[in-house]
Length: 411
Image (cartoon, rainbow, N blue to C red):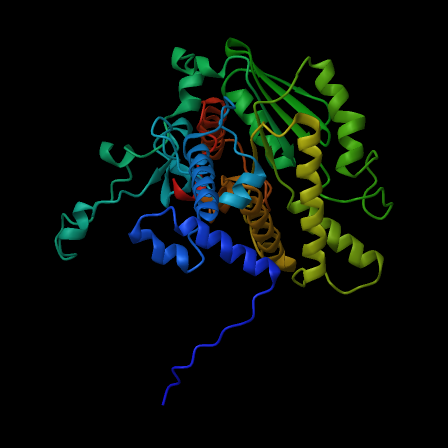
């Protein structure tokens, strides 16, 4: 049988004073409030504290939903981590590149687009497969398929459209590898810009004179942290800290370039190579194995260091993205497996720090016929136009007040 005995603990001096205060407060409350007050919780003091907390919560929620006073709409990494990700203001276009879709190629390279699948059922799903009209083998898409697609920004830019005037005086900086260098060089060729190479494994600058628009590529040897002789025979330093100080920053000054408007970073393929060379140097059989946990932890620490270093260079208000992986032609030496591991790690860091993802490579899986080297490098063509539209879409988000705060995964 359940006991009806109530147990009480003795009051110390502090508890006794709190109880006396509660009793004094209860005398000033109407009868319907005395019960709560007499129970020792809803005192006037505590009601004031709870009210203040509710007001503070409302202010923070409003800031996250509608954006801070900063014109770029940047929400700090700390606020992302502590309070979650805000939704997108109504004046900001929905991100089509986070939606599931398919590539549309069309007749010419500049017809290329990423086309999200519609939310509504497609007409073909409502007819039986044994009908001759159910399935069409026409490779063109109906006009309604492009409703949710990104505007053809690169094509508009190539035609000199005034609608692209928002790119005037803007700069996008890619910190990465040969894949970024190639994309920028091909972009420049299609738009009849001027491309200046400062060394294929150093830096490159693309300018589109009509808009005074600039794309920059800083080439890194991955996240390697020292000038190891077994790693490379190219010009030192190899680590990003040394290369940026010795090569990139002086070149930016020579090109009369200040802070970029958007930064897109990556480090994948060179790290795969670095870890393989390190294992061989220490006579460890590891070439065809997946990365170990400690290797991935080390790589994560270096990626964190790169983000911190970039923030020190350009401040915390300039938007940063990670360019995610594309797969190589085949899985020899488990390259695909290893790059997948690094990519998953980078995506986790992006979510942790509120850094958006530039998922160009993921939309090209299976398009191995687009490699010019039979291994990993895409040739100039449709993939370039996809790159251009994505880069320009995110640049517009970066410079439109309030839009960078949009949480990419909830668009």
